[in-house]
Image (cartoon, rainbow, N blue to C red; front, top):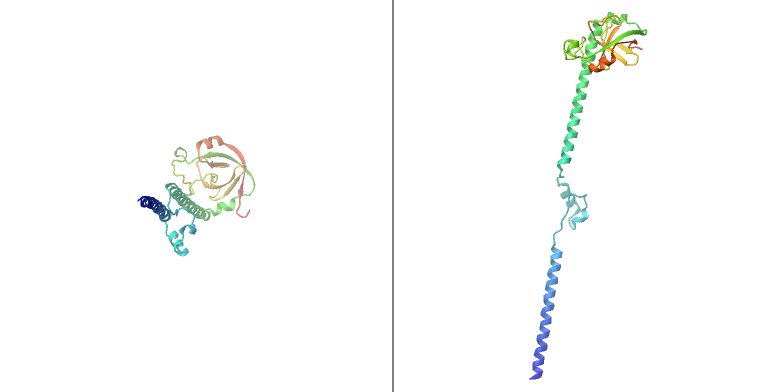
Length: 221
Protein backbone atom coordinates (compact mmCIF):
# COMPACT_ATOMS: atom_id res chain seq x y z
CA UNK A 1 0.00 0.00 0.00
CA UNK A 2 2.89 2.40 0.64
CA UNK A 3 4.06 2.62 -3.02
CA UNK A 4 0.51 3.48 -4.12
CA UNK A 5 0.15 6.17 -1.43
CA UNK A 6 3.39 7.88 -2.43
CA UNK A 7 2.38 7.78 -6.10
CA UNK A 8 -0.92 9.45 -5.34
CA UNK A 9 0.82 12.26 -3.44
CA UNK A 10 3.24 12.85 -6.34
CA UNK A 11 0.36 13.04 -8.79
CA UNK A 12 -1.45 15.64 -6.65
CA UNK A 13 1.68 17.80 -6.41
CA UNK A 14 2.23 17.69 -10.20
CA UNK A 15 -1.41 18.63 -10.83
CA UNK A 16 -1.05 21.65 -8.53
CA UNK A 17 2.00 22.92 -10.45
CA UNK A 18 0.21 22.48 -13.76
CA UNK A 19 -2.86 24.44 -12.58
CA UNK A 20 -0.69 27.30 -11.24
CA UNK A 21 1.27 27.52 -14.50
CA UNK A 22 -1.93 27.58 -16.56
CA UNK A 23 -3.39 30.36 -14.38
CA UNK A 24 -0.22 32.48 -14.74
CA UNK A 25 -0.21 31.95 -18.50
CA UNK A 26 -3.84 33.08 -18.73
CA UNK A 27 -3.09 36.22 -16.69
CA UNK A 28 -0.09 37.16 -18.86
CA UNK A 29 -2.09 36.59 -22.04
CA UNK A 30 -4.86 38.88 -20.80
CA UNK A 31 -2.37 41.58 -19.86
CA UNK A 32 -0.70 41.39 -23.27
CA UNK A 33 -4.07 41.50 -25.02
CA UNK A 34 -5.05 44.60 -23.03
CA UNK A 35 -1.83 46.34 -24.04
CA UNK A 36 -2.33 45.44 -27.69
CA UNK A 37 -5.97 46.55 -27.75
CA UNK A 38 -5.36 49.83 -25.88
CA UNK A 39 -6.86 52.75 -27.93
CA UNK A 40 -4.46 55.04 -29.77
CA UNK A 41 -5.01 58.76 -29.11
CA UNK A 42 -4.16 61.02 -32.04
CA UNK A 43 -3.73 64.76 -31.46
CA UNK A 44 -4.84 66.43 -34.69
CA UNK A 45 -4.12 69.89 -33.33
CA UNK A 46 -0.39 69.40 -33.69
CA UNK A 47 1.55 69.69 -36.94
CA UNK A 48 0.55 67.06 -39.51
CA UNK A 49 2.52 63.88 -38.90
CA UNK A 50 1.20 61.01 -40.99
CA UNK A 51 3.45 58.49 -39.24
CA UNK A 52 1.10 58.42 -36.20
CA UNK A 53 -1.73 57.08 -38.34
CA UNK A 54 -0.16 53.63 -38.71
CA UNK A 55 -1.60 51.59 -41.52
CA UNK A 56 -3.99 54.27 -42.88
CA UNK A 57 -3.22 54.97 -46.52
CA UNK A 58 -1.31 58.27 -46.89
CA UNK A 59 -3.83 59.91 -49.25
CA UNK A 60 -6.72 58.96 -46.95
CA UNK A 61 -4.83 60.39 -43.98
CA UNK A 62 -4.27 63.68 -45.78
CA UNK A 63 -7.95 63.92 -46.70
CA UNK A 64 -8.87 63.26 -43.07
CA UNK A 65 -6.57 65.98 -41.77
CA UNK A 66 -7.66 68.48 -44.46
CA UNK A 67 -11.27 67.98 -43.41
CA UNK A 68 -10.60 69.08 -39.85
CA UNK A 69 -11.81 72.61 -39.00
CA UNK A 70 -9.18 74.66 -37.12
CA UNK A 71 -10.31 75.69 -33.66
CA UNK A 72 -10.13 79.46 -33.12
CA UNK A 73 -9.63 80.59 -29.56
CA UNK A 74 -11.60 83.67 -28.42
CA UNK A 75 -8.36 85.69 -28.27
CA UNK A 76 -7.35 84.85 -31.86
CA UNK A 77 -10.86 85.55 -33.14
CA UNK A 78 -11.02 88.90 -31.33
CA UNK A 79 -7.63 89.95 -32.68
CA UNK A 80 -8.70 89.05 -36.22
CA UNK A 81 -11.95 91.00 -35.91
CA UNK A 82 -10.12 94.06 -34.57
CA UNK A 83 -7.63 93.95 -37.45
CA UNK A 84 -10.46 93.73 -40.00
CA UNK A 85 -12.30 96.63 -38.32
CA UNK A 86 -9.16 98.80 -38.39
CA UNK A 87 -8.67 98.01 -42.08
CA UNK A 88 -12.27 99.02 -42.85
CA UNK A 89 -11.87 102.27 -40.90
CA UNK A 90 -8.63 103.04 -42.73
CA UNK A 91 -10.29 102.46 -46.11
CA UNK A 92 -13.22 104.74 -45.17
CA UNK A 93 -10.85 107.52 -44.05
CA UNK A 94 -8.82 107.22 -47.24
CA UNK A 95 -11.96 107.35 -49.38
CA UNK A 96 -13.27 110.36 -47.45
CA UNK A 97 -9.93 112.12 -47.88
CA UNK A 98 -9.92 111.48 -51.63
CA UNK A 99 -13.47 112.85 -51.94
CA UNK A 100 -12.49 115.93 -49.91
CA UNK A 101 -9.45 116.62 -52.09
CA UNK A 102 -11.52 116.22 -55.25
CA UNK A 103 -14.19 118.60 -53.92
CA UNK A 104 -11.59 121.23 -52.93
CA UNK A 105 -9.81 121.06 -56.27
CA UNK A 106 -13.05 121.37 -58.21
CA UNK A 107 -14.27 124.25 -56.06
CA UNK A 108 -11.02 126.22 -56.38
CA UNK A 109 -10.91 125.52 -60.12
CA UNK A 110 -14.28 127.22 -60.49
CA UNK A 111 -13.00 130.27 -58.63
CA UNK A 112 -9.95 130.43 -60.85
CA UNK A 113 -12.13 131.07 -63.87
CA UNK A 114 -14.19 133.70 -62.04
CA UNK A 115 -11.13 135.49 -60.66
CA UNK A 116 -8.92 135.34 -63.71
CA UNK A 117 -8.25 139.09 -63.54
CA UNK A 118 -6.86 138.75 -60.00
CA UNK A 119 -4.41 136.06 -61.08
CA UNK A 120 -2.96 138.43 -63.68
CA UNK A 121 -2.28 141.05 -61.00
CA UNK A 122 -0.27 138.78 -58.68
CA UNK A 123 3.36 139.86 -58.17
CA UNK A 124 6.28 137.50 -57.66
CA UNK A 125 8.50 139.54 -55.32
CA UNK A 126 8.86 138.90 -51.56
CA UNK A 127 6.75 141.20 -49.40
CA UNK A 128 5.96 141.73 -45.72
CA UNK A 129 2.63 140.52 -44.36
CA UNK A 130 1.08 141.34 -41.02
CA UNK A 131 0.03 137.85 -39.96
CA UNK A 132 -2.45 136.83 -37.29
CA UNK A 133 -4.20 133.53 -36.57
CA UNK A 134 -7.82 132.43 -36.27
CA UNK A 135 -9.95 129.32 -35.64
CA UNK A 136 -13.29 128.09 -36.95
CA UNK A 137 -15.04 128.89 -33.66
CA UNK A 138 -18.49 130.50 -33.75
CA UNK A 139 -17.39 133.64 -31.90
CA UNK A 140 -14.81 134.28 -34.62
CA UNK A 141 -16.61 133.18 -37.78
CA UNK A 142 -20.30 133.45 -36.84
CA UNK A 143 -20.64 129.70 -37.49
CA UNK A 144 -18.77 126.53 -36.62
CA UNK A 145 -19.00 124.34 -39.72
CA UNK A 146 -15.49 125.24 -40.86
CA UNK A 147 -16.60 126.17 -44.37
CA UNK A 148 -14.56 129.03 -45.79
CA UNK A 149 -15.63 131.91 -48.06
CA UNK A 150 -14.41 129.89 -51.05
CA UNK A 151 -16.64 126.95 -50.12
CA UNK A 152 -13.94 124.49 -49.02
CA UNK A 153 -13.42 123.25 -45.48
CA UNK A 154 -10.62 124.71 -43.38
CA UNK A 155 -7.48 122.67 -42.84
CA UNK A 156 -4.54 123.37 -40.57
CA UNK A 157 -1.24 124.24 -42.28
CA UNK A 158 -3.10 124.99 -45.52
CA UNK A 159 -5.96 127.48 -45.13
CA UNK A 160 -5.16 131.18 -45.27
CA UNK A 161 -7.53 134.13 -45.17
CA UNK A 162 -6.24 136.67 -47.71
CA UNK A 163 -7.15 140.24 -48.71
CA UNK A 164 -9.62 140.47 -51.64
CA UNK A 165 -6.78 141.27 -54.07
CA UNK A 166 -5.64 137.64 -53.83
CA UNK A 167 -7.66 135.01 -55.71
CA UNK A 168 -8.87 131.82 -54.07
CA UNK A 169 -6.36 129.07 -54.76
CA UNK A 170 -3.32 131.35 -54.78
CA UNK A 171 -0.41 129.84 -52.86
CA UNK A 172 1.55 132.00 -50.43
CA UNK A 173 4.88 130.90 -48.96
CA UNK A 174 5.18 132.28 -45.42
CA UNK A 175 8.73 132.29 -44.13
CA UNK A 176 9.19 129.82 -41.27
CA UNK A 177 5.66 128.37 -41.58
CA UNK A 178 5.34 126.83 -45.03
CA UNK A 179 3.08 127.23 -48.03
CA UNK A 180 -0.58 128.17 -47.50
CA UNK A 181 -3.52 128.50 -49.89
CA UNK A 182 -5.83 131.50 -50.06
CA UNK A 183 -9.23 129.96 -49.24
CA UNK A 184 -10.90 132.43 -46.91
CA UNK A 185 -11.75 136.10 -46.44
CA UNK A 186 -12.43 138.31 -43.45
CA UNK A 187 -13.81 141.73 -42.70
CA UNK A 188 -10.52 142.85 -41.12
CA UNK A 189 -8.34 141.11 -43.71
CA UNK A 190 -7.19 144.03 -45.86
CA UNK A 191 -3.96 145.43 -47.24
CA UNK A 192 -1.09 143.28 -46.04
CA UNK A 193 -3.07 141.60 -43.23
CA UNK A 194 -3.30 137.80 -43.61
CA UNK A 195 -4.98 135.38 -41.20
CA UNK A 196 -3.57 131.86 -40.73
CA UNK A 197 -6.04 129.12 -39.77
CA UNK A 198 -5.18 127.06 -36.68
CA UNK A 199 -7.04 124.26 -34.93
CA UNK A 200 -7.17 125.64 -31.38
CA UNK A 201 -7.51 129.04 -29.73
CA UNK A 202 -4.44 128.40 -27.61
CA UNK A 203 -2.37 128.00 -30.80
CA UNK A 204 -3.87 131.16 -32.25
CA UNK A 205 -3.24 133.21 -29.08
CA UNK A 206 0.32 131.88 -28.85
CA UNK A 207 0.96 132.90 -32.46
CA UNK A 208 -0.29 136.41 -31.78
CA UNK A 209 0.40 138.90 -34.52
CA UNK A 210 3.69 139.43 -36.31
CA UNK A 211 5.29 140.75 -39.49
CA UNK A 212 6.68 137.96 -41.70
CA UNK A 213 8.25 137.76 -45.13
CA UNK A 214 6.00 136.06 -47.69
CA UNK A 215 5.97 135.37 -51.42
CA UNK A 216 3.39 134.29 -53.99
CA UNK A 217 4.15 130.85 -55.44
CA UNK A 218 3.30 130.69 -59.12
CA UNK A 219 2.31 127.40 -60.72
CA UNK A 220 5.17 127.56 -63.21
CA UNK A 221 7.82 128.39 -60.60
